[in-house]
Image (tube, rainbow, N blue to C red; front, side):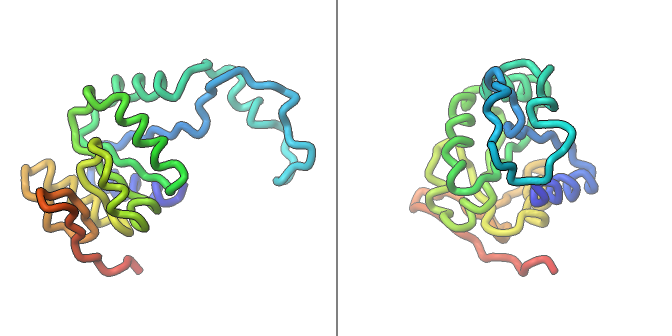
Length: 173
């Protein structure tokens, strides 16, 4: 996804280490050659998705995530999800909650259109509402330097009184 690619590029440009866990192409079961759609939606190619992952190990998303966490000890986990997949990401994070030694920020479409719902899960520390490029840089700086991040624009977080949604920043041109 281009949004994630942009966020990763911005963070890397400022010297932050970034590792992406994307479960889109994790081979979770044996592929059946006969399960190809009769009428292709895209231009035909000399290979299929099955060809691309044929030699990949079969594993669950949880197994793949556990390997990823073991190989990369994050200081911040960012969950970007549309509404239909938000709970899938939250369920995965909840399974590893005891191993997470970092803050979790939720962003993407769901956090932007349903901020209160995105803040509801206990595993989520705060959310990004809207564009995340400048937001993530500020959050990373605050976390690195032990500064208070609650003033950052586009931030939503939990308080004893409920939910605090900060002012939105000007859109990037």
